[in-house]
Length: 500
Image (cartoon, rainbow, N blue to C red; front, side):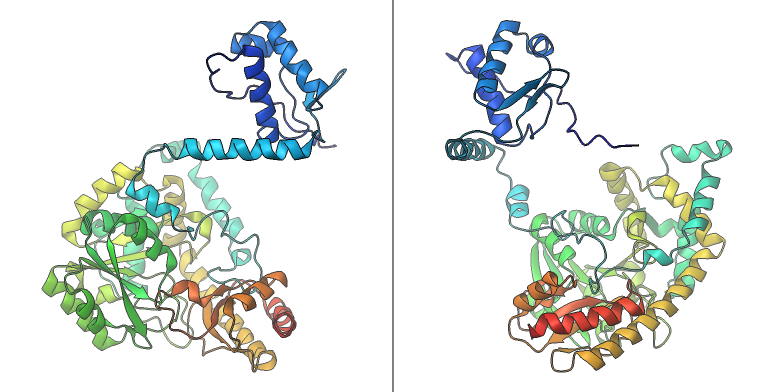
């Protein structure tokens, strides 16, 4: 069956209010002409009939006919029997129209500046959100990082569990659910954390959310009021840094080395900070672990200051050389000051949009109330399916299987780098995760990144994770989402792109 590619009919556009002293015919003509030139009425779009337009805007039909006729005579519209009146595919006098468009755009910008001038809007205008439509990659191109292999997910099993939840006897799943999260999933998460992360916690301490970002936002709102100081790893996760930038807190960039966050530097720079953001199990992006001595120092600082630690435990399950190391939250005394965050978007698939917080007892009620106010609750149907997925053992089997697959691909990535990239890129030992921070043996990191983009090879410049910019040129590169053949082929293409 052929697909009609004709642009859909434009029923009615918001045309604004006529200015004083301007005739209705001139107002309608100018409004439609502006909509055409500014792309609001794209080429081929069908306009309403003169009768329908007149009735909708409460105009005389002769007024509409006159405006349409002027646009037809100037070439902006075309009228054909059986096809109606449509926007011309080739517009007239492009030179004159270019000036007209510029004037309209300037006028609209000036009008937009009358919008409320708020700190949030001002700070938001200064960043390019890491999750914006512009920054998200199209498709999966080796070696774009932070991605798992969705093709390996047991989608047929997930569909079966999903269907079971949609039986007529279970339609209550389609109603609102507990703001803290489905009890069955909270119990499942508590059981998982006890085995996999060494965290013994009651299900009542777990708050289910859509994203870890949402959990950090709650922490900034509730625990770091006004211009409170907050520690941020440098280098560190850009999404956390950007959220701090727009929240209004005073971000304190604390340096990171091979042993993780420099706690002594954090204390020197901002002893009175109310919150510290850390990735202790696998530092983002460098990949190291927070040393035992610094874990103790971090907990001691938080306890002495009455501050809190936000532990982002984002992909700790994927560790290849030994069992996953226990979470910071599992340490004695951590239950009072550590807020542990985890996500299923890394372990299963990004679109599941389910995450959790493990909260100190005194924060459970205020965080649940705040979450209910801001977002009601996470997707209840997805929660129910995930609870079954965990309780029936599918989750554990899937994670163990993916750990083996990713370990094999990490080896393939390291071997391909050794064969093809000597003198161009250094790849350190890959001990965990889905990506690795690599050093570039070129001076211009941005140019190397652009050359790889042109060659269809994904990566992220390492400088995007830093504030101090003291690091050598590098790229964040992923391997988990790509099979061995794709890794080998792209490794060869990378050499050609960089040497060009």
